[in-house]
Length: 336
Image: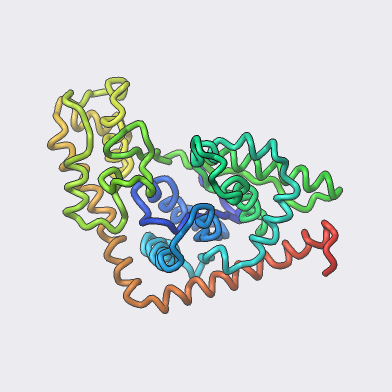
């Protein structure tokens, strides 16, 4: 899918844990790329983080750290909008309206709640159950029409459009626009270094399963060295990676980070074992991650500057969202 131009783009990331390679390849680098030619609103979704319990001091710390990482990775807060979700009340206000528009049956179909809650669904927060309505509010508070998403987020966009259609139908208006997803053609699904059947995740109890954007060079090298692979040599064609999940994961990582296709990577390393390949993979990861890590450290040495970026971003975001959400409130019957 080609890069959209002239769109209002919205996307958010949870400020829990350090962003990892999967976050970078699946979202952050595309946020950076899509800035050119678009109006971008990027949000640290601290309200979503509360769907599971957070230590308050840690949450505040992680919002600042992730803001610094995003700027270090290439988000330009002077040209675009970067802020923390809770600083703009329009999100919560519109989410409540959408809670009343969305149907329980729609919530019951959301597969991510089932995945996150597992077998003990009754013990989880009501917020975890209805958070897709808040996601819809995040987007529609700005009437954003383009949302960079991974394949696993398609269902949330479908829900947002269901809400748009029902709101517009119930209140006999065309107030909210349809939302379109943007799935980059070079998007990468990065899997756990220790288990190729699971996505790389911040919540995995073992840090050995992920490459974090603040990892030092030697840590990256050691994690890749210990990453699960297999005893077979690398094939010359992608078909040779069938049913070799960990091998495919490592080859895919190298391909995306080096700007090559999987077939080009396999032609380069065909017949070799994983020892030399892992060294090459670690080198290319360090080449990309080290500058982000060092710039993040520099930014975090002046946290007042990060606070100022978020405050300015929240003011810009509020200037867009406030009139939109106020009008939505008037449409449903609030006295303004």
